[in-house]
Image (cartoon, rainbow, N blue to C red; front, side, top):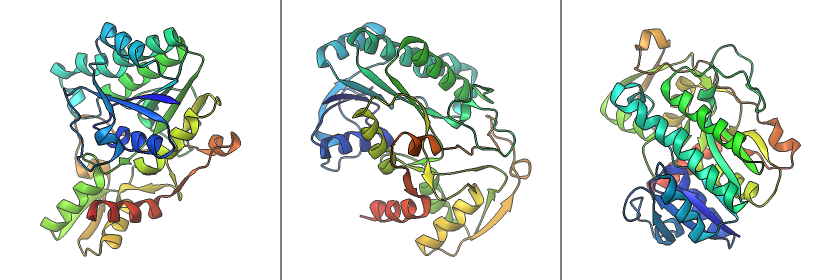
Length: 304
């Protein structure tokens, strides 16, 4: 199977290419830089066939996918700087990438009759209440510019294609890029105490584990909407931080605060990021491992 993967310089795209290569599939990666600009670790992602591609350029997207003729596209590329998306000068760019770029990918997939996997987010929902969001729920109410742009991307895929997966994730961490764990480790080394919100609840997603699921999906035709975060129950960012320091052997004091006490960010954040993942098992997919196990493996990975 030949798979075109966008955003391979990011956390997820990097791991997806490596997983596809491990299974013997042919992966072609793309990103905006002229050459691969991700972590140089000697992996398949760092050495696979690479296409420099601006996904907001519809003609360039069409040419690139026509040349590759993939069986599937795993679309990981996105604007993910949530706060920066709120700036007036960035709003059009965010929409062009997350919605327009996704529409361009979907159009090319339709032309080639290939399947598409689109990575979305819990931010398409309102973040209110305490009940886990169901994957087929259409009660959308994004709280910020980023969430709206990802929802528009979802709609572009669903309204264009029949052979698609829309996979919502949350609280992502991986080796190739910035994330909450790396931030907390750095902050914990500089300060004796950190303040972390305890009223935003969800579950982390380790890109290495998610990549396995996405490769599983690419090998099937069980299309539709899915939620995919690590197992192990729902936690707050405060709970997550405590476990990060425990596993890292750090003694930084973690003080729980409310979102209001912490201070407002540019972009509103969801309080309820609980995603129901039972559809994975119902459709024969293997759920992601426990988040504590994922954290342990990740901490070991970034030490090496």
